[in-house]
Structures are given as C-alpha cells and as structure tokens.
Image (cartoon, rainbow, N blue to C red; front, side, top):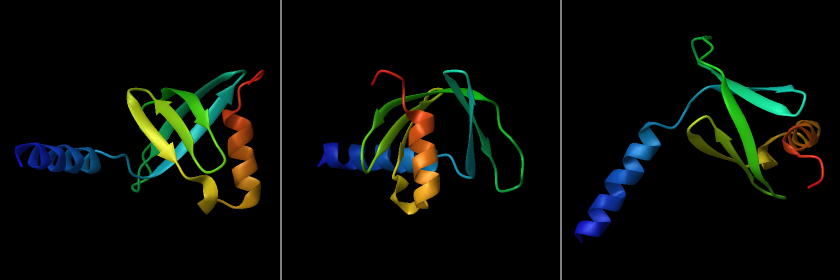
Length: 92
C-alpha cells in the first residue's frame, strides 16, 4: 500500500513539472538544440537535444536534463517526415 501511494505521488510530481508550450528545435550541422516557447510567447533557455529512439510510433528525446517522448502520429505527414529527418543520425 505504501509503495502504491509513493508511486502515485511521484507520478503526480512528474506530471506537474512537464513542460508546456511549443518546442522549437534547431539543427546546426549534426547538433540539435531546443527551446520551449511558452503560451505567453517567451522563449526559455536553449538546451542540447539528443534523439536516442526513433521508432515508427514513438520518438525519444533528451532535452537538457529532461526526458521527452513524442507521439508523432498527431502531426501531418509532411511534419512527421521533417521531424524524423531532423532526429535521424547518419549511419543509423
């Protein structure tokens, strides 16, 4: 019972600190970086981005210290291809 309560509290804390807004990703050579654009229109600090999983229905990113999972199926086909091209590492 105590473990279940601790798990619920941890999940709630993770949910509260999820980033909100629009993620702006920039590619400079082979290096990716990103900034969050808040609902108020303010850009946050730029963080390095590492795409460590690019699957057919899920993309895993590390943005600075945060872990972010994207489900690109909600994007248009054009945007989905652009995102996959952006996250793809040569030779993989």
